[in-house]
Length: 262
Image (cartoon, rainbow, N blue to C red; front, side):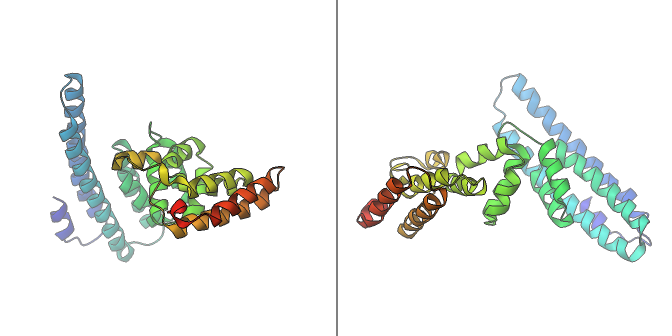
C-alpha cells in the first residue's frame, strides 16, 4: 500500500492526504495487533522475546516509511498550495504520525521529525512525555548526540532531564567530567578525569556486556595522558585546599612508565 501511495498520481494535494490515511490506519492496526499478542504471551507466561523483536522491527520499518511518505507528500504540496493551507496539511499529517510513533515508542521516527523540523521545543516535549524506566526517549536522544560527538549539547540538554542524564552517564562515564565542568564543579571534574585515566583495571577480565555495563570504553595511551592533563587543568580551576596534593599525584601519574596508563 505504501508503494501504491508513492506511485499514485494526483491532480492536487488535497486528495492525497485522504489516501495517505489508509496505510497509516493499517499500520496502526497491525502494531496494535502485535502489542495485543505480546501482552497475551506475557499473561500466559510464555516466551515473548521473538515476537517482541519482530514487533520492534516491523514498527521501525512501517513508521519510518510512513514518515518518508509524509515528507514526499509535503514536498509535493509546495507546488500545490502555499501559506496557511499548506501549513494546515503539514500540521495534520505530522500530528497523526507523531501520535502513533509516541504510542508505540518509535524513537527513530520521533528523532527524525524533530531534526527535520529543527524544533528543539518539540524534542523537549517528547522527551518529557516519553520517560521510560531506562530513560525512554531521552536516553535515545542522548545516544544520538553521543554518536555525533555533540557532547556539550548533550550535557546542556541533559541538565533539563537530570534523572535521565544520570542513567545515561552510568553507561558513558567518560562524560562525567564534562558535566562537572558544565556545573563549575572543577574538583569533581578533576577527580573524575583522574579516575578515568587510570581505569584500565575496571574492564579487565570482564565479558563484553559487563564492560558496557561498567561505562568504560577502550582508551589509548594518548587518551589517558590527555585525561591526566585535563585533570590538572580542572584541579587548578577548582583551586581548593587539596589542589597542591592533587597536582603532585597527577604529575606522578604522568611520569609513571607507559604500562601504568596502557
